[in-house]
Length: 203
Image (cartoon, rainbow, N blue to C red; front, side, top):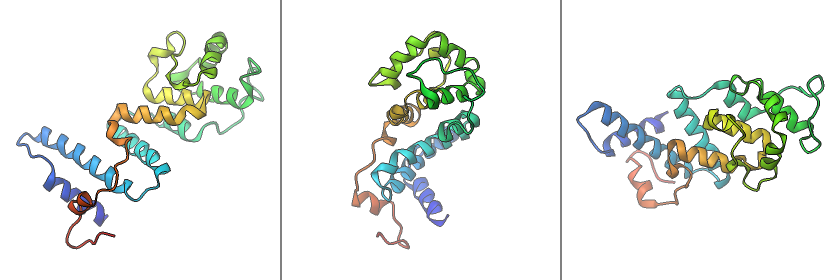
């Protein structure tokens, strides 16, 4: 907590000033968020930086009331029950039980109501997405391509092609809070010194 408070104090002192309250608050929010990201990234392994960026992004969106908890829970956890055993039959061999369970679980979310039926109707289109090298960039059929939010599209990618989820998450972060949060900063001793105070040593 003390470290966090000191970082915020530094952000207040070093960020551009403005006499307009709303503008000043916006500057502080952006400046502090970037400072927090850069400081924490210095202590993370490369493989963990994208996960931290996503956590930061979703926390900001949550504060702006732009996150559906059920959708985020599905994205992070996935299916928690077997819906295939007593549900509709698997529509094609390439779908398989795990993926069909993902689709059935996805269809339980309000935004995806009826998605399992749409999946069966447009099976060739979804097969094309499944076979694509960049499945996260392929359009969905009919109205689904326009009606899904960026977070809901991540949920779809999770269900369809888990291996494309990382690149989809990076694009999501970039669109929501900026590319600087998906390009981890290189170590800069001068910047680290500027972010320090006389009571906290640099290690």
